[in-house]
Image (cartoon, rainbow, N blue to C red; front, side):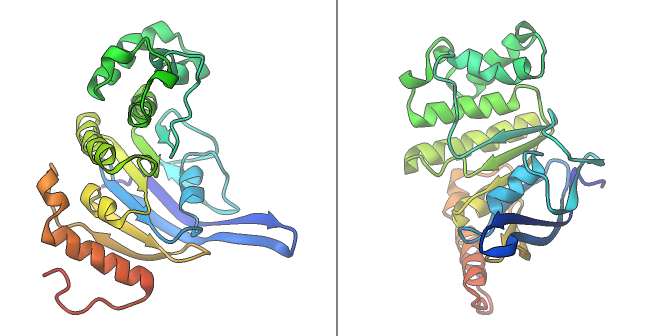
Length: 262
């Protein structure tokens, strides 16, 4: 199978006054993501996870190496990739529907062409009746649903998510995790998901990629031994709890005991 995303020896430096060569954030990162795969990336704070996601989305150019999306080198943001950040970043003066339509306007396409799809997406994420509301009238979870709908407007083949649920309360977070799983299945999207929450990663993903502390390198990739669709019961299963523990031990540099997955 031809990969949807290919990351080849990506390294990235940030300028820093006390370091002549700057601060090395990522070092020789290489991996692939198959079409329709859900890949979660975890690692300690400061290991370069968010920087890597921005490189995948064409928002940042790597200092070395390259990223290919559908065989083409990523040099700028592409309509083939939708991005959702930790904060929804909605425009307060635009209605919910108009916020979802923003990518069409930025691409100089007629918003009227996308209006039915925007409303359909709002219905899919459960806030269709709030299309005429403004962001200030929505809860944090509802605003993040708007951001998710906006990212899906132009039917991207890849969805890049940078800790999209980290600022939400536990119940809302769990609801949106289920919503994300449902939407990804409906859209047949390839997903790269950044998170600090290892349990979240193993429940949502097909594979979990662990980065080392800065500079971020690929330390290990863990396959998740569960078929789809995922269920809420699996979220708290012994299988996923054991895998989450194995990943956590690897992050701490502690070998997992034999039979850790039960």
